[in-house]
Length: 180
Image 1 (cartoon, rainbow, N blue to C red):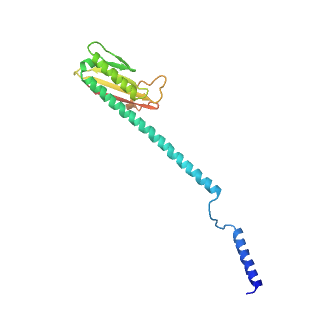
Image 2: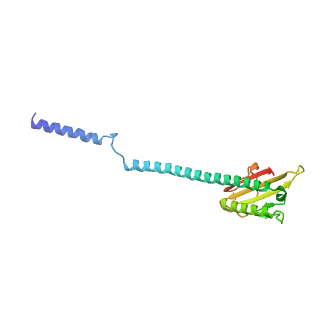
Image 3: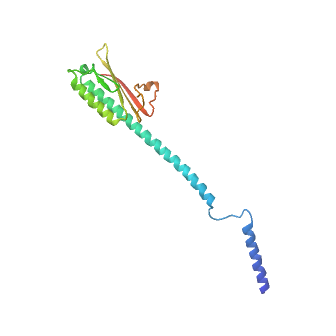
């Protein structure tokens, strides 16, 4: 092969290589800046969704814990009232104010007062209602409601009617009715 032929061959190879670089639709290797930014945007949106789901789960866990505490505390009060139903018949709690205490049931009033303090420590902005009613068959019917809210409202919620589907804004309530 002569020098001229080798130069022609080299020039031809160079032209083919140059033409393949300029040809549209040529497959590139690597990632461009735009592709990287789009991938980062998609990842950020996905992570925001995961973070909001985590916050929602945490809030629901706290609400479930408060509801569990309220159920346990109402059961505790009912058991205290069952220790002496005669002394308990005079008691009432309305808007966290205990009434019906006298010399014959002062010991029970002290227990209920401690119970109210515990509820106030464990549930945010708790409002307690207690109503006791005697019936003809010598049973005393007790109705205990406990409401709570993350942030206190003005005026505070005082009625708990979960059977009606009533919702407490950013909180909850339980209503326990039983015979003592």
